[in-house]
Image 1 (cartoon, one colour):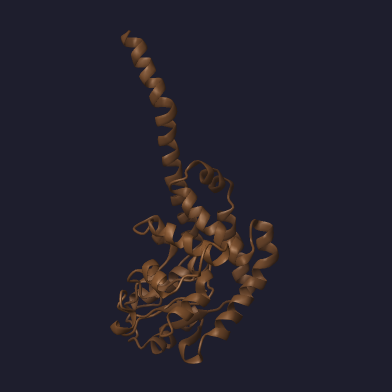
Image 2 (image 1 turned 60 degrees about the vertical axis):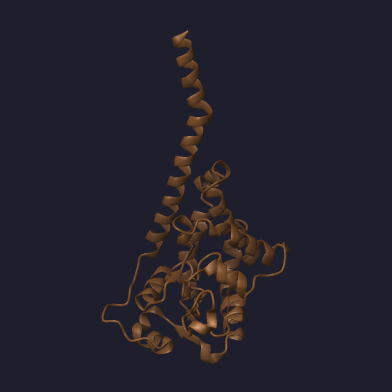
Length: 269
């Protein structure tokens, strides 16, 4: 999808910066692009924040998804996005932010947009084998129903975003609709973004065009490249491990602890 970049401290008020958006790169290239922007001094929002310091933001993002796609209220504007994006100077093309590309471009008219494109067939293969495969993984579904405090909010924000934004509710939907949705998203971003705010970019282009577009000096280090499938798999394993830990604790509290207490009472008596 896209990201947003920094400018004047007068423009953003709470954030003190403007934003950059990157085009529908999901699922691949996301983290590499985030790393590149951070090297340039632009902290980049990514959904991995949900599993660390920004877990509490899930509820606000879920409300934004429900309002935009399920009629739960008026769509989010700049005030809401300022709260959701904190002091990040860039927004990754990651779920759920990617579903708000049009709203973000409208809310931040000073933002620059980097549209990172790749071959649609290559993207589709990566998307199906990482994001879709892991989102609808049976273990994730199991953890979703058991762990309502950690796994469920994270899984739900992905499931409802895919349903509302893409019309996808299962892997078969994804197989039938993903390529068309990919093309539609690029067409939307190109149509609504002024030419002077848009950079069409490939990661193989390296630093020069990106830095020129953003008005940043070229770093004295290689452009970052990452194994995105490995990163997504690690993200899933973290989600599942946290969910299983919480499940084990619940089993102990509700079953093993009472049995242990009963056993001790019988022993004492």
